[in-house]
Image 1 (cartoon, rainbow, N blue to C red):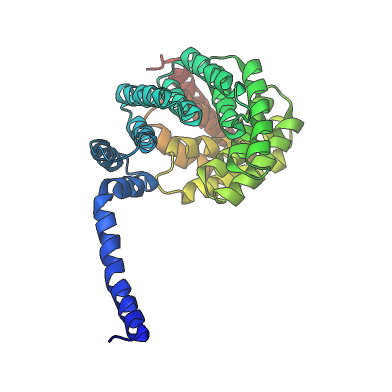
Image 2 (image 1 turned 45 degrees about the vertical axis):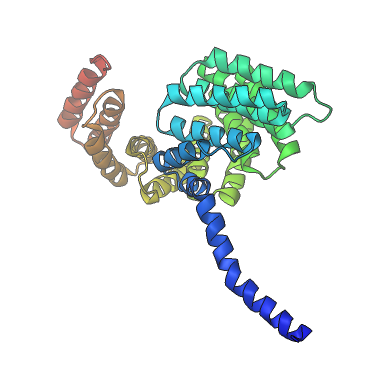
Length: 349
């Protein structure tokens, strides 16, 4: 007769043996789902799309999970610029969610459609869909404040892109308030709305409010996304621009220098944005009498801008002409201004 102790030890050995086999069986059974999640996290959109499409052919998943797969598929397609396919996928998710009777999934699926509509520049359609989501949430005993916050921010984006800045400002104010309630004061979603509020306040000339919003957004982005993230860099750039426009040139120089250092460190960063910062900073250096560093920045910027031409190049050449004039080369300055005028007069392609 086998003792209880012997049985216990055998049980442990069996558990040790069987556990990795069960895990491997489970992994193989859910391979497409796991691979899709991995590729979504690494932003490998084409591979994520392939595995999500395969997962949707497997019938064993619940309606809730299938809706989740569809919404992840919509994102993967949208990120690749496959906007018509993404819209079809979002509408399939909406239909399935409506049939399931799950209000939260229905709202989430409709928000996926909003993302596609904004990407397709159909801003009035996006506005209409967002208002439908708000109506759907308003009918609930406990509205989803997180979804209302993100939808208010997306409404602000749609209104801003439509040229309706005053309405966009109000939407971003509502988004920031809702995000703070739903996510907390130091959440990335809150920071996104604060960044937009800061940018719009800067455009309206309210630099005190702009700088308040942008400094707070910058602090949150540095904590949540990292000091070298695109979100932090964009907030810092808008802060520098507000300081420049409000007359704080020393403060603007300091922040533009930080932006430029961040741009130089970012892998695969937008060179056009970096050259724009170089030209802004060079102009401020000229005003401060720092001619040598201004000339060095402009030489780098012009080398990049000459490939595309247009108004940004004309602006850089005008600042370069100021540099040449400050260095006592009046004839060279005149030639640079003539070239800038010629480029500025050319039609934009």
